[in-house]
Amino acid sequence: MFWLTVIVAFLFPFVSFVTCESSTSPDDTSEAKKLFAFADTNFDHQLTYDEFDEAFMSCDINGDDKVRPEELLSKFLKEKLGGVKDALVLFYNLDVNADRSIMAEPDLRAAEKFFDTNEDKFISDIEFENQFVKLAGNYDDSMVANSTLIVDSLE
Ligand SMILES: [Ca+2]
Ligand SMILES: [Ca+2]
Ligand SMILES: [Ca+2]
Image (cartoon, rainbow, N blue to C red; front, side, top):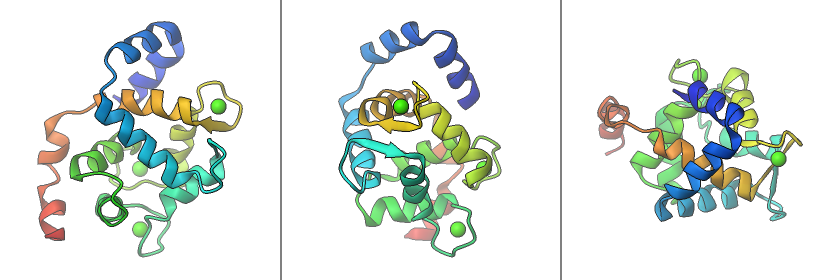
């Protein structure tokens, strides 16, 4: 589903832009702003790929260069970045090779391409918000249902 979204975004930039604007949920936009602010450590409204990677890898609690769903979730809850659903929807969309871990290759490389729509090597706040809203809409209940074990383990 993630790659479908990417392909659609590349093939029909104007169509997907319009679609995205018309279906923007205020919740998803404020969630995007929160995550962007967390990653934008020098407050210049742009993320370099390094900043983007560092924000994710700051979730890697056990230092194995892989972010597991439970690691992302505990970061979200600790830093008040969002709820359980927000963390899991982000996780399963970004885990492009579906191995239940987010790594630099291939997951973060794919995510950088997805968010940096004008390919200038910076992810602007606008790019991030527009693309994040598309991701947040790419959600089905099985993502959360399949993760009850993870959620239970935190309680
Ligand atoms: Ca880890
Ligand atoms: Ca992965
Ligand atoms: Ca850009």
